[in-house]
Length: 634
Ligand SMILES: Nc1ncnc2c1ncn2[C@@H]1O[C@H](COP(=O)(O)OP(=O)(O)OP(=O)(O)O)[C@@H](O)[C@H]1O
Image 1 (tube, protein in one colour):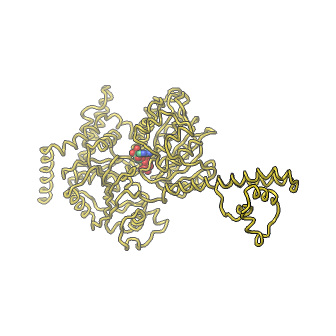
Image 2 (tube, helix red, strand yellow):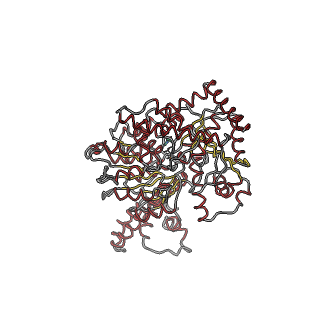
């Protein structure tokens, strides 16, 4: 074997010379002149070693004078470029591997790397330490996948369309970058706007802004009553707020006043939460209102972000056409339910079968908190009247209840004072009740999207949950779609369900909007219901009259009379107000209800005492029995 110095000299002398690799292969290998050519992939270290080698050889080139220096430099640069490319490629591979592991899918140009910890946000982006403290205080140890990718994107002022499962932390994903960009409170008016489809969700987002921004002094405003807001916002007073959280109709109402009573000219971030819902057209959707808000945010540097748990093709198309260099971020498979929810379907035969099944569940013992979804406010009222007589700690929330009542009900459910909450689609999206144990779809949802959102009220932030869906023959048209969602999430479904006829797009759209007509839930004879409705109407009428008199006498509203009326209103099973289940934009709603003060509280206390106070319950049961007897007689 040749001595190392000899080999070195041999290598230097041999530079540029071609070997007959068949004849001299052994010599060439020994002097390491062809190893680099036969190695298929080079690590960074290896590549650097190779470069060192060529650096050495440059001297010898000058000595030998065989090869031109410029050619050599070119080669050297090429090798260096190759190494940089290789390093970048390796980095990209690592990123892809990490994204795959977290099921993060991205589409777009120049996408920043996901962050792996909240601390990284401070190091790389300079997020304020107070915000990190707030996160820690809330028990957010590490970012969720949507937060890992959406936060750095928004911190780089990129416009995004984000889709991530229910309960996966989308709210903090948009709040953190907003708080960072606004830096500090300034007297410039609203600089960030978040639009949500329901008041409950808007209020919840408002609360999260306060929690995550605690100690930073930002002033967030939630439009509860446009008329009140108008007073509050006199031309200059609106300037003292930084962030606005609202439902679309309330904001549009204020924008459309002449002159507008709110200005969005300084808005830097417009976030549309539940974007697929807000993009829906027609009575149930908010497409027009969203258009008006989009136009009102007319600053040249406004950025927009859309968030939802479910993906809609038209939202994506709109974003691609209208947003600047938009990035799409998706977590997991599109339009799927979270796998932390154990899903079950239960065939109950008929409408009355549902009530029997419900009572059977109660008899066996329900573990609260439980959410029950029905398809309309009328049915919500009917079911409430059935269950309350069963002695269940139950309350109901729907669009016919006043805002105060809705707020109180939500509060009582959050604090565990109410165990079972009956609701409509109103509560289907975004609401974060911690630890909901079971979601019951008493009425079958009209689309897979609605199903995903409804059952997403449980199994949040990685916790386990259960969902039970009743179905009858009326629901067969929707069954296949929901069975598919269940199977995607790894739940067992009978094969026949997946083989049912598939509805085409047009049919699906029609079915989505029209829930099947169902027999009443109520077991109380209709004549008594009618009587109750008539009575309620009379009371409402007399209340109006009293209200007028009170106004004339300049007496403050919110008296005990209002309480009694409100109680009757909730107890009535009919309803003649024409509000939809979503936020309606009927601003008349705000005026009288705002004045009813503690009526919701009264109502809640009453329903609670209904369960704890046996005497009261017995009285009501007696009354009901008597009513039934009377019908039989007549
Ligand atoms: N990084 C985190 N670590 C722990 N908990 C978190 C984290 N981020 C969010 N959460 C909690 O997870 C729950 C769900 O978050 P959030 O309401 O933002 O979900 P979401 O994705 O908006 O759901 P939905 O689609 O139903 O609106 C909340 O209680 C929130 O406090």
